[in-house]
Length: 498
Image 1: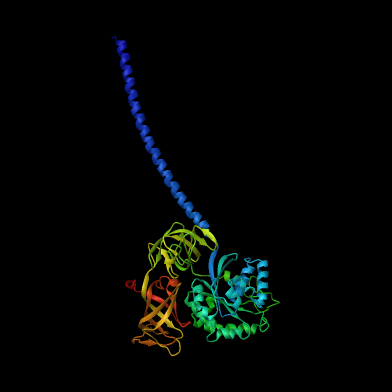
Image 2: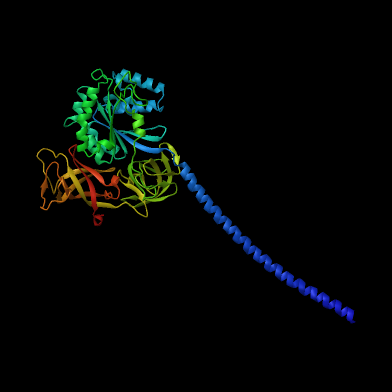
């Protein structure tokens, strides 16, 4: 092989080795590129996930109605005009059409009850229409420009006070309906009348704001008389103060006619009532401010009703936290672990509901017969305590004839949706109403008007909270033989009794 050929071979080898080197390098570059591309892909997916979570959150926020939601309970003596006023509100806000009203008018006329036709909008069952008395808590919805309202029309008759309690325990605002008709206000207000008991119960059950509507102002015995209106206001004010309402801040009086709708959606005409310069009922409801609840708090929803519908459906008002489709929850006190299949607000299916909303929640994992009114749907991480004994501060209102309040006293306890027989196990200390401090001497019994700290025992486990943690789930009433004898708040839980 001559020199030239040798040179060519060397050059070829060099080229080959260079090609091999470059192939190695290309492979390395390729593998690096693959790793890099994979990393980019993973990062992209993570970002997409984050964005979709944010989008979901934004969609949830969007889905939550822009308007605030308020529960309004109509309370007051039987025949004051609660159902008629509620019916008129629905008619004025466009929830009921003229044809329906004409149908009700004819029906009421056939029963010789012409003035009841508006009440038929709220009183839907036949028993209520025949008697002209609300028995169950009627429920309806209407909206103003700023607020979505749920009306709870509570029964006024004393036989149905337990139903009224269940209505008021879900309410944010109370509308106390008083009849201005001669003799009717007096009957409702005197001892034994439901006006007094309803006000005391409303305060105890957490209805912090009260609109006192003086109804039937168009009645021939009243005829929009300022003197009659002022007389009712001056008699009611001291009693409202006594019941614990700050009349200047939390109470507003206004005159209306529920039957013909005067001073309800629009202000009363000066030609009808020259002396009234205040708001109409819709304006007063819109202006009502209530304390904010925590949408991020532990979930609490006392169950007021349940039924079967493609699963178990429970109804109630969200007192704290939020619920959404797919959540895992626990029903207390029976510790049943459940999954949320669907959430309904009013009649609409929603993805999520926050505090203050009245909801129906479809659950899997629990049978309808295993749930009772008063059970609480709550978050798994912080479930509501369940106890059979607790400590409470009580105010004795009015005991039955000659009764004394002592250890061994039995009554019916109403706390949120719970109705349970209870016994006072021990009186711990009496509280001086003036100084609000405990008295030194040992207490064996107390009488009307006393404040006392005691231990209360129930037969079954109940779900309650300390008043200082959750006011709505820690305030209660004691009733005996159809009469409210005491109101109170939970101050301590005996968790070892669970």
